[in-house]
Amino acid sequence: MQIRENTDSYMKELQAWLQNTVDVPLEEMSAFFGARLGDYEAHMAQWEKAYACFADAIPQHCQTFLDLGCGTGLELQSVFARFPDAQVTGIDLSAEMLSVLRKRYAAQNMNLICGDYFQIPFAQAHYDAVISFQSLHHFQPVQKLSLFQKIYRGLKNDGVFLECDYLACCDEEEHLLFSECTRRRAVSGIADDVFVHFDTPLTVSHESDLLYQAGFSAVYAVDSINGATFILAEKTGTERKKE
Image (cartoon, rainbow, N blue to C red; front, side, top):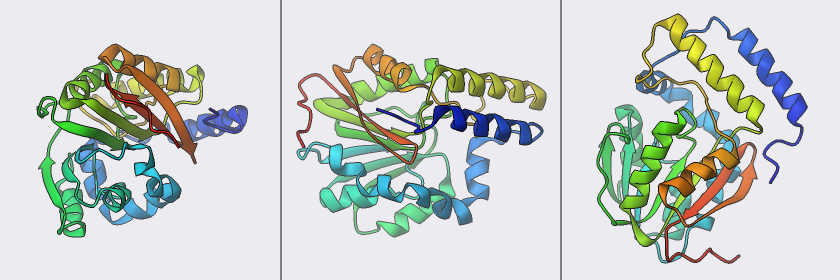
């Protein structure tokens, strides 16, 4: 699957953006989103098509969901359209965004938790599907592996993890962004264990490798829409959804 149509052109644009923002200080994650709540959904509208088909890859039997980094719940519109009786647990760092989500889906069966999904324990073998939309591209591989292992343990034996996220087009992009994030942390004096809003995506291959290491039996790059790549990871016993 081609993540970017023109990798050379994209990398030149990325390098130019990094140069133009070289002195922009890093921001702590929850503060970043809290300060931009008014503009958040307008910004995310570029992935309208991805949101609309987000739930299509989820097996029809799924009823219990865990949404990581749920924000204002834009991805849940397609989930509730396909699974109207879904039971959803949502976790997000931003209390402001969760307030919007709670009002938007007041009639739905939801349990919303304000906090860090790396630290909050997940119910074991409880969920049919764990989902995440544009939330995981800010973290180190070791952090992701630990989270993917938690996700795996939280899923039932026929469960799936559906991730739609910004993934690096190549090893060069991955290395460039991780190196720049490390440099900006050092300049800003921000410790490695503080979540900051700076993109550090992995390639599809490296993301998939971590999911296999976490225990998933099969991992598929399902689609890519405007730079948002869908990855479906299946726990033992799951059959891939046939189109």
